[in-house]
Length: 443
Image: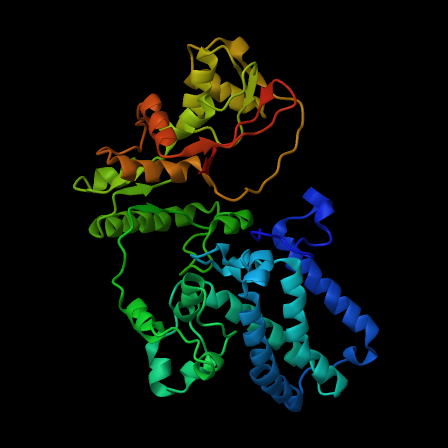
């Protein structure tokens, strides 16, 4: 939010509240505008797939009016009156992310859409528009905008060596990062030549670009191993991955998966990684590589600690979901010791608990029969307990593996979690049966 929010700061559908997320705003706005334009102007319908003259027209209009008007609009937004009411919201991100590119008050989005509509509407009114030109221009804007805010230099130097004038017509992530740290330089949209013309170029732009490319590879403290197993797991992966080396639930692929995990652990050990999180027992890899300095962490102890310290007072039942592993057995054992009943969804799961926990009274184990629904997405700044466990292992410098059937001291793990600023994600309950999330919110 801007320091002094002005008129049209909020989106008009803000009163919808939980019916949409903040990231839906621009999607809704774009869809509404394109629909209105298509219904208002008959010539916007029935476009051909390709027209070369329309493509050239859009390029010229972007290089000319759009870049020029954006430059001066951007400078105006840095005037203290407009900056405090609007643009300061965007600049609250000094260390930018791709999503920063579309974080603006509603009034700014209106201004930007008016600018980007110049090439599109002109091509429509002149009868030179095409499906390809419209889609490619919108994709170009989104790609360049996200790239400029990614805070990672990925434009290779050889591009500028082959064609030196390119630096005047294409910016880089390091170029725009200076605008977010220096504020009064590098105002251009995607083509820096207006900063050269009006002398607002940051003098360190070229130096920062070269230094960013020369940076040595960082050695991480923690490595988190994961692979695609179900369609939903794509949401837990970074954008882009080298390959998919496994198919879910196929036994013939397990050896290949285990080999890849082992190679990843050895590679991390060579790079000096302190801790490596592994969602599995993992004892095999430690046994095959007894000289490992990197510690393999499956996060089991922290998961148990999260559950035990997240149950609301007065809870009489806890529902266990998922596969019964050493984590589930440890949680069930600790809960039953506290007099809390443990429920499972299926009868065979209850029978497994009875076999693994023979000292627990059968009255403490039951099959859950009531249905309930839960959200399957996470708010910002929330991570799984397994991921946090590896971070804690590295931060605390614990010189022991947590894999196989090994469990760390739960109280020690929990105290370290709180000491480093992590808190359990609160889940509201309407009855005395609790479903516990193995999730932690970072400060």
